[in-house]
Image (cartoon, rainbow, N blue to C red; front, side):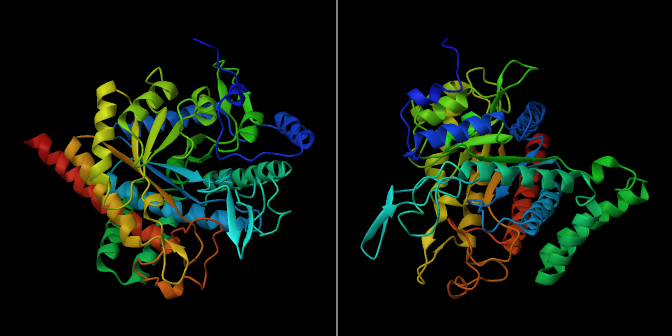
Length: 456
């Protein structure tokens, strides 16, 4: 077998990547990044892999969420805090429903580059290169702004380092204390005036009160006042990824030092392509988006390439088909996985297959469609006897109006009031937490069905 090299992707076909016109500037940035410390460490990536292996067995559940694309202009400590806060609340509700630990994985500290459906866009008869994320070029519709600028990689690194620094402080400094988190969730449930959410929140409170009566409290038990929080992003810009790849002295394997998990998108999953080649050689857990065009043979080839040792927790398959299409596509992919005996974690991404253009002209995602795809995902796994191991949302802790629906009933007419995304529409804080309550219901139902089968 040929030895993997972190530069090996350069000899493979590349898609969805910019062409830098100033090669000297690009090389200078790559050299500088190669001297910077990695953003994450091998021990953290191995711990995440173990936790994802547990989720694949049904002994944990993955919550992956965060921005569609992180922004330089909108970067703030408050924004990081608010998204982290909502994910903690969602995780507590999901833990109650699943009765297993929830693995918390942010689309943060690296989610800057975005694949595009076309290389160019046209406005008022003017055609320019597409915006590919702040790590590559700029959103302003001018010729200069759309030129790929390698210096942006340095800014992305600094913002990611600052984000991780704050997340680590929040995770261990008391902000994540269970009692504090649940008090936020109680406030949400009471504020919605929805009986079923209040009932779940009350039952969670009863469990916390019982633990307190038994002498188990956040103040005395480290596990109830701190959390493990990991980061992930699509490894799209491979010059950046290569520059941050480091040799792990403990194992002798290569680590993608840009994030704990990296994933391959539906547009960059060519088995002989650059992105698959890069991901195949790093020790990190790898995500793979699976859409309607993913064939059984495609998936088998990618599994063999990305996880040849069939390692548990190594490969997460992120299904994204669109509401109404899950039963058509997911069973054949589950069958392919069973045929090769692969260890995988199945996760539902109900966002990317449910994007529509609203009557007002805004790109949006209807809340009911998002929820519908999650429910179909659970139903198919129940029929197939496999484990629905997690969910993957594009979301924010901000009070945006980008996705329609939810208990607060964001309408088409509301979209223009707080539509802040530079890319795809995100669930706001209220919609995200509401979705967690509804997914918790599915997990409770699944647990009840599994108990009945075991008893029968």
